[in-house]
Image (cartoon, one colour):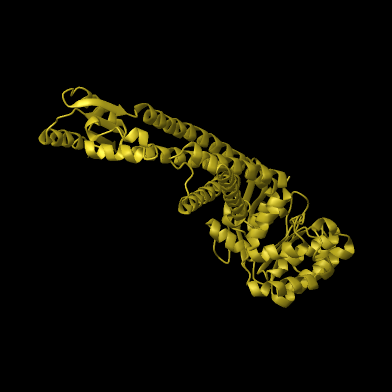
Length: 213
Length: 290
């Protein structure tokens, strides 16, 4: 999946979250978005997900600017999202959370059990599948969130500060899984982070946002 | 199946809210069914009287055949008259003997000559009977006496109309209560699950996908409420059937026709489905916009 920002500006009232931003992420890229707090990292994720609209400029997904809600929904179904605050559904088990995402993207029925098993196995969560999110640690929750994202075989994984709540070991493990997805399946990865050591060690494309005071 | 399990989860997660919505629907349909059965019963009683000669015009003795035929035709040409039946003196005696066959003392001294001939008139619309009565009361050379069950019919019509008006007001009131309570319950549930809906939308769920469990919840309230409300009323009616039919005898107040009960069950089930779906549709449209 290719994402292109073309002179995108997003204002919240008088405050400019991002200003005249242009970049292109092509299929198979692994891109970090870095910058200090308030520099607009999460705004970029929200704009890609069409959660908010740009004040000016346009965002192209596979060279097409989605206009209708149907197009927006269809694009979202191709994206695996790892939220900073996990956003797991609290009264569903980990397995049910993954199953829900598969149902939303209309994944083939007979392939669903295998997709769930594979994702849980990759994230080493097989023995946590029947637990509820509140019964998991922060690291396990983040892995569960990644399992939910990769189960649908997405074209793009959007990870919003996925290491923000993790200790260094879990943070590195998560990055390792994302790198594997990118290299083995060619999944495009866009990840926001302020952990510069992670960014430097992977040697991938970086979009560095500067906070304009 | 997935949506059904979602709906079940919604019901289970807030059982008291669900019970309130179910009870309100049930009470509303209990009242609706009660009015349906009572209205049907009263209509049945009214129809019973409508099929009987509602006016009996007793004729003077010695009238010739052309005069009788002219009078019969005059009544028959009045709009909404169903039947005009001439009962001769001989036929009157026959009927009298049949009515009193168990009491020979009352029949042995009676001959056809002392009984008057008559016209028995029935109408599709009971209101027309009063016009007939007024018209023929003036014909003193023809008519001896008019017997008209005016009070009974008027009273029955009054009861039926009053019941209909009362039913319209009460059913409308309880219908509105059911709508607002169900709306409030589903609205609360949507608000409680705002984060879940938001997450699902970000994962690519369509608006219809996230609304579907709430629509199904509304349908469950409507279908369950109409079924339980109907069955509760039916049980009470069946329990009191013998007493009610004896009280309104010879008319049949509680029908014996299973098709009638099945038809009304299906009608109420459909109403419950539509009301439940309509309510949840309106509420989910109002609350789920993101």
